[in-house]
Image (cartoon, rainbow, N blue to C red; front, side, top):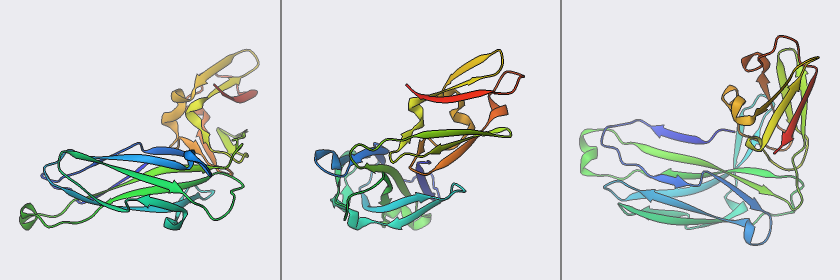
Length: 224
């Protein structure tokens, strides 16, 4: 799952902001249904920001499908002006219309709004949008990873109802006489996601990191 930073035309004297954190884990009820973001403006100008929310699904081809979902959350405030050299706190709280059967992922978008300044008169504007990830999980939800070897690829599928943070896992592979155990960080560079939502799958090329000549005969993912 990629974290998105969208830049619309860059110029040398552009002003920007920062968002922390870029990933949030929420529950459907209680205090853990609420998350706080911190927006920092290190620039010389005030920056107006609008916060929007989209539900997120991933197709079997790995394409992200986003749908407006502002009604699933309360956003406080939905718009803000971050003064220069200062910070702004934004709180989002999940509301939801019905109990979730499995974890749902969202994009919490922090969109810089255009503003006219003297420096804009001779140049073009830069707008920076951050698309952070938020996962809302029902009580007791758990990921269940299933793995298959298909030709030179490992297919990893999440058959559970919770989100799998792949950085929590290690991979063990064996052949007839050798064994290799790798932390996820050892193979993370060979694929473009860090999380698997329910019913989502991804593949990793074996030849990119497997160092033995004999083919793999056993494979397992273990949560550390």
